[in-house]
Image (cartoon, rainbow, N blue to C red):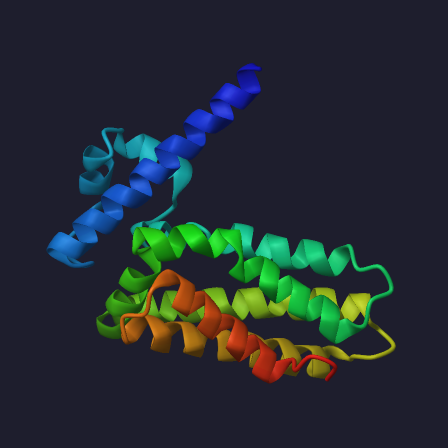
Length: 197
């Protein structure tokens, strides 16, 4: 019971930090906000901030790790399914509920806008995409060793993530609703992994 209460409090604190950061980044720009200001706006100490995030960049990517974990879990739990179906389900899991918070909170749109003018943030985004691709392609290669080698897995996962990220940025950039953004993401995934392909 106590562990459940602690976990809920931890999630609420983390969410408060994300919401405070989004508000401050919108008001003052990415470079104009400090970690101390984010912590103060969330009514926690700077020390508490660092218990949840290593840097202010990490706040913008708060849901990245859980999203990748969902994809990895789908690949790990495959049950004799064809590789493209499993990869499609992994992408659907990543597009699903974890993205909802980013889209409805404005975090995804803010990330796209801020990255356009902050080279350091662009570098961080690219590093995260590369790490995600490496983890997912490694898992896919291990799951289907008779169908894919490292190069094939990297190419397939890279094409899929690249397509979804580009579609997401374009859809957000034109002001689409969260549902429209999700539709654009799914359409991009289907272009790379056509049903029955």
